[in-house]
View (cartoon, rainbow, N blue to C red):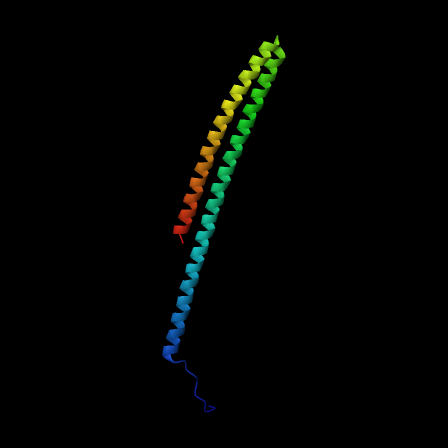
Length: 131
């Protein structure tokens, strides 16, 4: 042969390299697990926000429908009124009913907003604990 001895990696160095590779693999696996959890939590948060927004939109549409229907009923009563006294009576009844409806709608929206905030806080808390 050419007289050169083959180069051998010392056993300690090989073991050190193997441990380093294994530690790096574990660290990467941990990182990937955390990334998957973050994506899952973000998806859950987005889904929750979407559901809350959808529910709020449904309520707003229902309120608008009710308010418009009440206005049409009021308009029909005005058209059928026989005198100014009857017009004023219908006007008073309409205003009272609309104020009551508005108070109910505000209370309902406040409750819905509080529920949405509570759910969002729970989702954030769960995500933070999952880290």
